[in-house]
Each structure stands twice: as C-alpha cells, then as structure tokens.
Length: 408
Image (cartoon, rainbow, N blue to C red; front, side):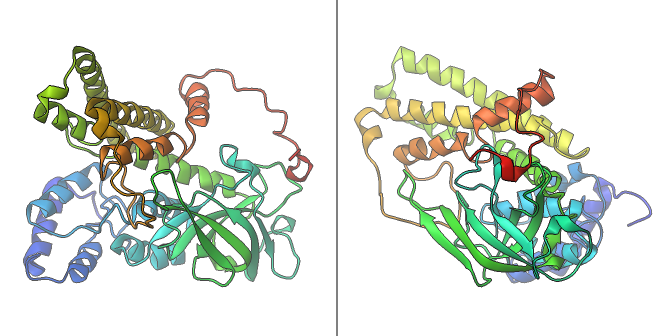
C-alpha cells in the first residue's frame, strides 16, 4: 500500500480482513491488538511498520468506527493517554528509527505506560526556567559539543506528574547547559522510571486522590541512545509535546451532550423539583457553549488531520477548563444540599485520570485542576494573544540572559 495513499474503501477492506482472521469474540485481547498494529490500523497516518499505512489522518475515524461496530477491543486510551497524545507524536517527529521501533509498538498496545516529567516546583508556568540538570558522564556538559554515546546523569525534582506511579517510561526535559539562555540549554530524554535513583511520591489532591505525583531524580543514568532530538534542542522538541498535549486535553472527541454537561442535563430532566428560572437560563447558556466547544473540537481534529497541531489547541484547552469549572459549579448549585455531600475522600492512586467520574462534588473539585494542568490558563491566554491574534509579545528581560544568571 505504499504506491498510493490508502482510500477509505481500501482501509475498510483491510479492517474486514483483520476481523476475519482474528474474530474479536474468540481472539485474545492482546493478540487482537497486536494484529491490528501489524496491519497498520493502529494509527493509520503513521508510517508502515510503525502501526500505520501512511494514510490521511482523517481516515482513522473510519477504521475506529468499523472496529467498534464489530465489538473489537480498544487499547484503553484513557489509561495510556499521555503516551498516545504526547509521547508518541513527539517520538515520531524527532526519534531515530531505532527509537520509533523500540517505543511506539508497546506504547500503543498499552504494554508500557508513559508519564511526563516537565513541570518543577520552580518551573510550572515558566517551564523553560527548569533546573533539573543532566550532565554527560565523565564531566563533559551536553552543551560543550556534539557526538553520541555514553550516559547522562540526571538530578532534580519534577512535580504534578500524572500516572508516574504506574509509568514505565517518561518524557523528560533537563538543563544541559546553564550558560545558555533558558530556552536554549535544554535537552529532551526518554527516562526509564524503573531506573535507580527515580523516586515517586504521591501528591494528595483536593479530591482526596493522588493521580498526581512528585518525582525525585538522584543520579539517574540515561543512555545517550535515549536522547530525543539534538543536544540543546529540547525546547523545540518539548513544544511539539505541549501542542499535542493541549489538543489531547481540549480536543477530546465526545458525543453530543457528553462530558461535564451530561450529568447536569440528566439531573435537570430527572429532578424537576430542583429547577428554577435562573438555573434554567444558566444551563441553557452552558449547554450551548458546550455544544459549540464540541463542534469546534471536531473542526480542530479535521485541521489536525491535515498537519501538525497549531496554537488553536491552546484556545480549545482554555475553553475546556472554563466550561468544566462553570458547569460543575452549576451542578453543585442545582443539587442544593446534596451537592455538598462527598462520596469518599479515601486516598486513591488511580490508573485513569477521570475528569467526569464519581459524584457532583468530585467533578466540582477535580475541575479546579483543569485551568492548571496542560498549561495554565494565563499562559495559554498569552499564546492565543501572540500566536493566534498577532498581538505584540510582552516584554521579557530574561530572554537573552544565561540561565545561571537569572534571579531565583
């Protein structure tokens, strides 16, 4: 199928061949997923041999719909969302052929969970100010010259790391040359979370859960073969990750009246005694906004099918955060005294990040993190202003200073 880009009909034919050879009702889940990957039907726009067929990205929906209708198992995308939405597209864009073949298959199959080691206690919104240090073994700093081979030794602390307690691998950015300005002295790595010196500690959130973690890196050795991209070019690589992250958070595919608006609309229909004219008006406004956001997400995915994600993902992520907080607040108000109840505050370390699960109190509290994770709303407003609207950038007096000379 390399002579021409596969058409929808050819992809459907390949799906039917897969289903005939591996009937979902009688085939082991892992065996079916492996066969799907090998057939190029995992992510059809990826190259052949890496789970794809070099097809237009828009045809993935055709494949997914056919497989879902046949009762085929999926790869549990919510459990491996960081790998699928952030690590995989970055590895595809910057990885060596060896890295792509080593990491993409087990990532898509769900055999290896990924997390993201980006944010730090002193580098959250200003991510480029990060201080986690990576030094080439033997004392040669990464910024001193090119060349491959050897190990890097990493020391530092990361924070707000979703799924670190279940992850096998992490995407990591670390400072490799403190003498350069903060955006220039960073290198991107693939970090083994089982390596000596990696310590994961739970961060209990306002929900009672600890889906977030803090990660301490003490003398962690990373082989140069697990460096992604060129030395010192980590910020450019990280931007690819961040753009994909915002699309994966803000542009999730949901059905009409799905997501956070669903339980509120259901409560409104089922509990007429809770209704007031004011709540009715507010619900209508938020329902319309949620539907506009859903349709905008569909358009964003269509644009994404034509190329790489752009700053529009930041706008969608902004909308996602605001709507979730307003809708969950309306739900708690609608339920009155019931809305003040909380199901369970037992410490959990869940495998899946659930934005809409459990009860109204959980949804209300969990939504508070939506304006922080994946880029704070304030930072995303700057991105939209500068890169979408073309407004002048804010003055930055630290842009050309060496990171080691910055005030901290």
